[in-house]
Length: 382
Image (tube, rainbow, N blue to C red):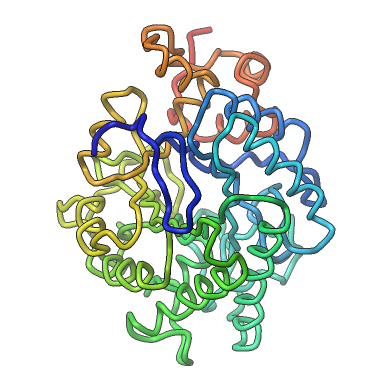
């Protein structure tokens, strides 16, 4: 299947009207208490109205000590009204509303969580410049955090979301537990590859129990680590195989560009392209599709800006296609694509930050965040 305009039905019965998903994107624009802001609501509603089959929210934190930016909260019952509002905005255009949930672990932001509260699988600092060394979580804390993911998934169900995506990629906590670089524990939550899978698998089971069989449940995975001593594609394939056996509806393969097979760097140096040392030249999409053998869908992402790109991503192994940068630049990207007006799609941000915010319906704090990644999105000349 290479036609992204066809519907897609998940095993639990929820149906996407087309194969396009709005990719999850960091907004850094929620209120300090984790309530979704008016700017975020306008951001997702504008893009929902363009006709995406499904929309994945910006990450929502499941524990106050795991906040990596000023994001949406799903850590306590008081966040429920905010989540209900967000679900309605995501669904405004007729697509499915999916809440992505996460914990930052060792890449939580100290300014948000307080000094001394950063915790992770092991007392090993991130490769990000200036990173602090976290303390190693106790076994009881790990058990508790599994419950926090389950509780967050339950709030997503109560708030009216159609699905939940667990963020197991891009160096956040679920990724950290699977990484031999980050997880050096000697208890049941660390050790060999199978042992390092236990936390992600436990979280998936807790989330599925919380949402039941009818809601969509996805997992975002980084297919390999290009950093020294990182896990390779074969390791990710083993994890994907186990995940697919737990009743997931999809696995979302996190890549900056599906063609280049380049995952996000932990050091966040966007000016240097990382060599895909762990990928061995193989296509993560094709390899993951083969190992899960139809038990769930595969979501491709990265480098999709045209209809031909979306079709190529499906040929490469994606059942669904998540798109981020293109609808960031042009909120009407998908509508123009559907209407055959590809030539009318904007390809660059305006030069002035305030004009980006106004023309592209992006919260000002999110604009600041986007512009902190040099060259990630092209801008018009001054």
